[in-house]
Length: 115
Image 1 (cartoon, rainbow, N blue to C red):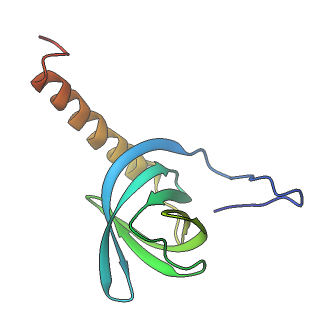
Image 2 (cartoon, rainbow, N blue to C red; image 1 turned 90 degrees about the vertical axis):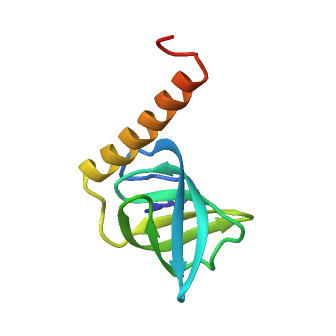
Image 3 (cartoon, rainbow, N blue to C red; image 1 turned 60 degrees about the vertical axis):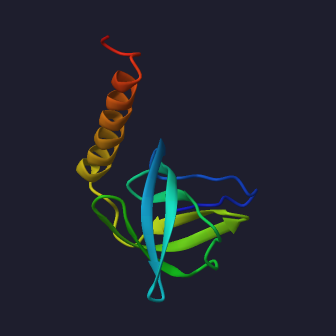
């Protein structure tokens, strides 16, 4: 969740980890494909065709359910969300592990790792 100080600086309570994972976002019974660009236990940076309005509630799934989140800010096609219920560290680790496995497999297929 964004915690803005009085000077406009961003003071997040949880460390964001870079990620590039396709995900599904549901809002008002419509589903859109989006990409997670960073992730923490408390929120995420998302890229999509169009950002939902600030304050909107969305439901995110990325191989596993991430739950409901509130759109905290939006700018162009990127927007930040704050999870209604923080993710467990194990959920974040599972997403990062899945991404790393996909990258390793792709690298092997291209002959860049272990070959």
